[in-house]
Image (cartoon, one colour):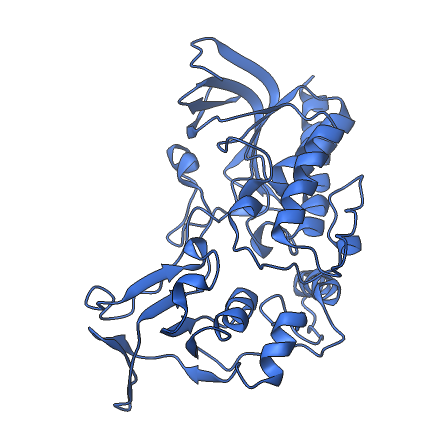
Length: 358
């Protein structure tokens, strides 16, 4: 799409063409609304095209769907790969004929007399409602550990990691206690000498529990919190699912975690008790922050960078909805099945509001 000075007008503009944006598109299409999906990437599949090669979902294909179409199983695998999910998203977009425009690099969203205006390098869109679904992948988080600038070795984040080949024969410290850290450590430990550093001891779910149970727990947790009731369950979405690669690494003793180190040195890491470890690389599997820079002109974010919501709707700007950024935008909303459930609620609210406005 080339630069176009004409302003495009729609009922709804969705910013982001990954899983949350496509889920919103499905319900907007079903509601018969005039909408557009603006995606900065050159092709479909969202961030799934950029994940490391061996990544596996921690739910089977039958529990990793977007609304309307069950994800087909990946031949030979119970848990789908990132490549399979990217294919599924591309096919989903085609199947429902969703009006995705790409690449469109949205720079900012501003108020515009009873509407919102979306400014991008490629043009301007005016919409009565905007759904922000830009995700978190483009905003990796690395904690402020002393000495990060002094370390002479290599530092990568999950977003940089593609596979273990470049670390063969090295000493690597993997930081983080979630599923990404466990899966990456499982394969790195086959070719490198690895140390796992976590803020708290990692919690492994029972071998027969996977993402299906975690989603149900997240849903019950939010409902209980709203009702002021205690929450019971086997874990939360931070717990580690024992997919086959993690199970294999655990059985050979590769998943022993150490406490988080206090600082980096020029040659490695050091703990508060004086223990030190030399290493060649540090891999930060330490999560992400929501990509919300385009919403800054609206002045909605608090000191933590969060926007106050009622459901998915911004409290201070009712024409804006947020999807897919984590539990604060809906139970498990950053997962495939969770994205669909929160998108359904958001589109129902938008449809009702448009009907009232006439």
